[in-house]
Length: 236
Image 1 (cartoon, one colour):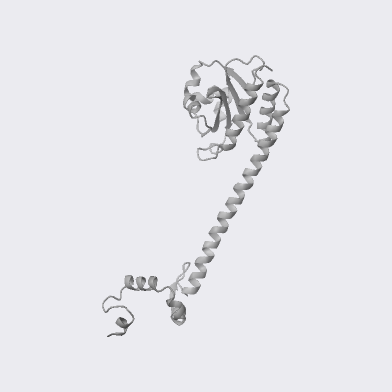
Image 2: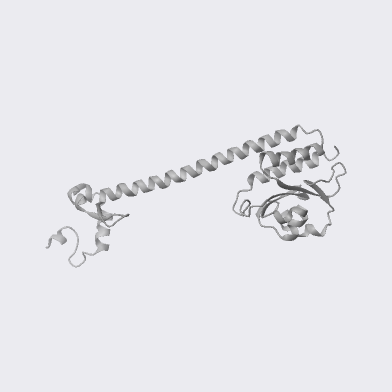
């Protein structure tokens, strides 16, 4: 019997796969043969020199640690950003609670969007009649059968905010003379029990400010608050 056969490896089968199989079935091999472990050399990941297996393992662990640290930093940054938005939404809600009329509430919405959310290009487009609201740059009303609203049917059917690019006709309906300045938009449908009330449009000259991959959870919550204000204060 050869030495290899005595160690459980048949002659002629001493290939990489056999070695890998043997080590998988004997995970404590290097613990019992530490001198072999220390003699193993591997190419350095960042150069032409060689390092020991132990050094390579340490290097791999450091890389994993750096990757986890980077991921943790990203998660902390996202959490802090969410906390900031949550605080702004909380302030937005409290300001609305102090509104004495629907017209005053709409004024608060416009001011909060501009002051707290840096939404300098925002429009509240309402469908139907709101005699208590004076048309202005921020708030406008259109008839429910306005042809321009047909391009927003999918938005109202989904009932969820959408971010990204808008058609030229949509931007013109929403932003009027300022439509040429708008590079990206956040469209927020306003509904009450499935009935469209209108929509809130946030625009930005930056084409990447609002993109399809961004979270719209807070916009959805804001939409609920605005819809409540419009309906609860209907007679105000």
